[in-house]
Length: 116
Length: 108
Image 1 (cartoon, rainbow over the protein chains, first blue to last red):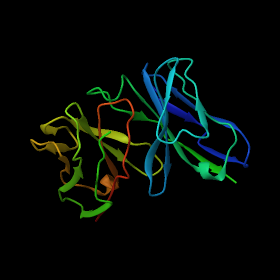
Image 2: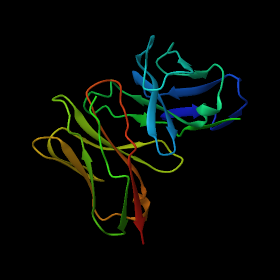
Image 3: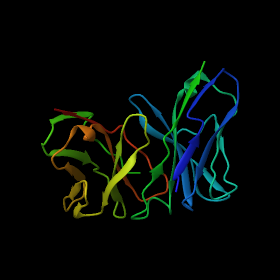
Image 4: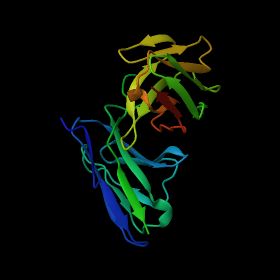
């Protein structure tokens, strides 16, 4: 049981390049989300999904796209990378809507992205 | 969404009990309180969750007073491996917002 798997672990991009951060979970979780973590800022929610085919915006969605075509996968796309998107990105999943009791988030180990 | 306030950092020594308090003055009736722990270079990990009074599991206790405007995470007899950042969340929606957390440093 791998849990939440994020790839790649590290990535360096030039300004204007595009890329996709991958997130996969094998726990049959309905809910998935993406956070970015910057020094002194804690974790900020980018996008989330309560089930296949459904996505919604979090606190800081600009510059990022997501889709949820399957229950297992929730990729995060950077269409035109900017230095302000240099950060550590975490994907998280939960069996149900995490506002439900006893449905905590399970996190991957993150992708460290640098945009030069 | 309920906003939480935690101390930025705390120091402790091995073997001591550590209490980290989170303030959530505008908690709603249906909100649960959840605590996560994060080690460097890892994603946060669920520690404990509660709604009212006291909850205890194998790693921590969570104390919630009757008015639910605050909660206290209690770590009994901390060790060096408890050095981490601890996050308190309150929410009854699918949009979970983390605060900046409390950085706990445990010294020998």
